[in-house]
Amino acid sequence: MNTNFTPIWAAEPDYEKFIQKCKANGVSRIITTIPPKELADIANKNNIDVIAYSALNVSGDMKKSYIWSLEYMNGNPKTEEGRKILDKHKPIWSNMTTELTFSGDRDDFAKNNPQFWSKSRKLVSELDPGKRIQLSPGFEEVRSYEANRFQKAYKNSQSQGVQLEFVLPNIDENGNADLGYEDPIRNAFIREYNQDPINLKNSDLNWLNFRANYYSELVGDIYKKIKNEDPKALVSTTIVAGEVNDYVKVLQDWPTWIENQYIDEFYLWFRTNSNIKDVEKQTQYVSNIIQNRCPLIVELSCYHPGSFQTKQQITDAANAALNNGANCVGVYQSFAITQLNLWHAISEVSKLNEKFK
Image (cartoon, rainbow, N blue to C red):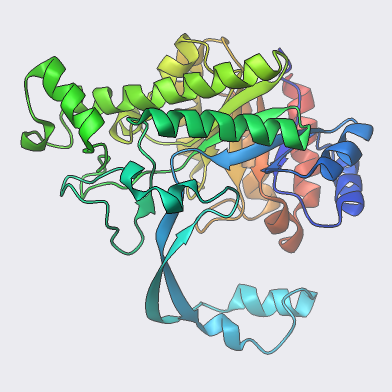
């Protein structure tokens, strides 16, 4: 079980140059959306692993778009002077529009099969602005499609494994998943509990756990499909870090994934939260449950609003994670690392990973 590596997410388009930056700063794993074979070839020659990455529980969304004041910037954002302008400016938005979009890293299965979309408590699949398209694991066709999709991504990229990203699902005003009301899941619940979930609260624990089980089974299906292709392939999940009771509310029963050995590695993603106390507390909580049954990797974002965007923030958070049970730490993602001039921070994270191994 390898626990001494430094991952980053996304690959810059000049693969040769990008790999050399990674190598110079201690990066030993690149996790990126369906990587081309060319990237894996160059990375592997430099002793850097590549992992194929894709969101599992979202296939598109009713995207909200705005006109941003940044569009009228006078200067080149790629230059140092342009970066200073961006850093000083508080972006202003206007004129929100919406458009139904589908994830660009896959085929048209979701677009062509709206009958497999998850339904909200309103028993509709139609999306409000900002809501996501989510294929329902209650359908055998969806489970088969997702397992085959990840197997194909692994095989075609010739990478070292796959990562299943779990983003936050559509939720209600109390943070509970507002999906899973399609017939296969709803009828199965009625048969088991003699209750229609439409008459229960979204927060009903039996109903939450029942829906979460479908996602756990889906993770297991993908794991088995990948391992049948190559027993040495790595299968991991990444989820957004939260408080103790947050995970079941969004149907992510990750302790079951570990207990059933559905994953080889577990990533805890601090996406829009740069609070060091939360890194300490939430990492320690997860570490205490994992109990060294698989590596725990803390993923620090420097890309999202509210994330870690200075060297000091990143190294402080890495120290906090490693001191509270993380096996190693990585940073999301490469475009932000370059634009924020944070490669020196990646080098420090790599040294910390080596120190704590």
